[in-house]
Amino acid sequence: MEYLILIHNNAETEAAIQGEAQEEFQRAHDDLQRELKASGELVETQILDDAQARVVRTGEAPLVTDGPYAELREWVGGYYRVDCADLDRAVEIASRFVEARWSPVEVRRIGID
Image (cartoon, rainbow, N blue to C red; front, top):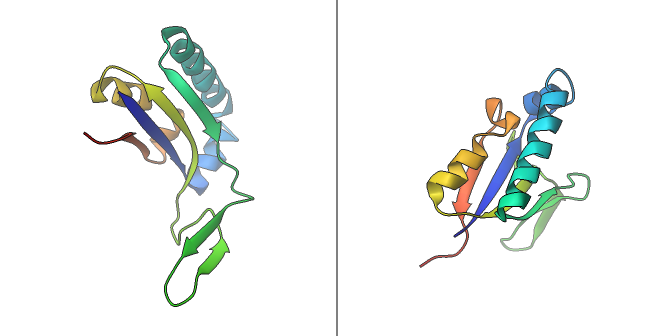
């Protein structure tokens, strides 16, 4: 089954991963990517560019604002798409992100039955 692991960020997360947790953050992602590639579970992973993000809402006329903030204090900073045995395995993968100390890491199954 495929799962999308959405890594949310906020100001506290950004400060930590650019400061005291930078080495641990980089090592955790490098190690996890190596492991998931070796096991064949990694489909893709990307950092999402917040400089080119827009939030779109529709009503009488489309309203487009600079993103990636949908009037929230958090934003999705990146994702991992994995193909693994089950939800428990996807959650185990998500629990290894350093960012989860400060921001949510969301796991969603791709597709429906």
